[in-house]
Length: 231
Image (cartoon, rainbow, N blue to C red; front, side, top):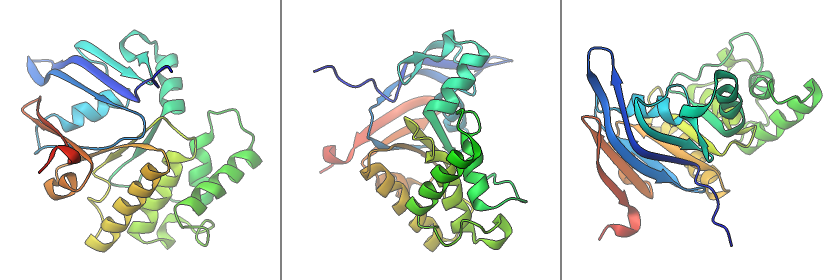
């Protein structure tokens, strides 16, 4: 049986910015479908650059980034945008919700480029909000929601199109500890249901609690550990 295409694969990836700043150096790793992975490291380690590459927001200076089997470096702008819309869901620290519209329409707007009509988009958004436990809040606007609830809306928006890869950038950074723990538990539940989840974080304790953690420092992968490898 043919093995499923990895969600993402980096092969010898380097990223050099103007002035000769090496943000990444010869990074290699693969994230298979269904994995739950933390990318962890201190500020300046290369995490943000990795996020941009995994999310097709940037291309490597050298090496290859494959997202759902597509070599991002060979795609035009339109193809890259289509791949991003189809295959990647983003969850950010600051939620990035439109302030004047309901949770339902914030999530439905994540499907604007799919070709679905408005009713179909809203039906899918309802299902996504139910999935994250916000069936009773879908008509609330962001200012009527707690931080944890806003992050759940953001997660619903990220998963509504059933992307291959869910990228969560410091998803608990703007939350209190209880809300943050609830968001991580939700991401675990989504992963258990089949979603591939990559969490970018500086929180070593959070990273250590996940099945796999990739540690980066000074633009290099210095450790790639799986829970089953630990004593």
